[in-house]
Image (cartoon, rainbow, N blue to C red; front, side, top):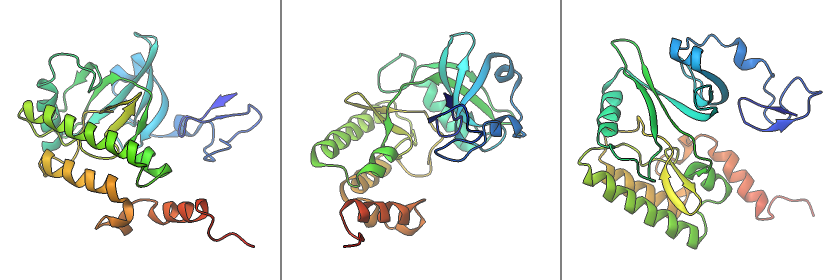
Length: 233
């Protein structure tokens, strides 16, 4: 079996392209990514989260740890600086954020990155793609988790920019941070958290920017079909 480096699905050896997303096996090898020396020497790309330059956010195999880790970019912008400020507040390892293994600081006109723990789990984006809004029990668990995380970030006295469907994930029964940003630091954590809670409660179709949500009409169609509409009689 082969494992697609883009979507992570397994498919049979006889196929040259992923049977799920159609990506050629050697697609990632042909990209013109400029990996930092530390990445070239110590890590091998396994799965892509974000393909933006200078190198992709994603899962990497760590030769040092002999395990899968996450690597995320740090832009040489104000968002990158605020993300680093948030990391500085996380001196003690706690379950609500991933352990940080290495930080390479961004320099002028050059992005940095950080290497952190990988924890399998569903992001809130993945949860809401399946059912939006989620059922009452799951919604309450997510909302309680968001409120707990908000309290912890406010105790750090730093705007974390983490309250987004892509930044938060459910691991077991607990809501935790998938990564540490950089997120939307232009809006306070409390406002972001309140907006996110409303979206979880009411679903995409109650969001002011509904039409701009990636894949919105695809989600509507899938939900429509799942509810038994549009089938021929």
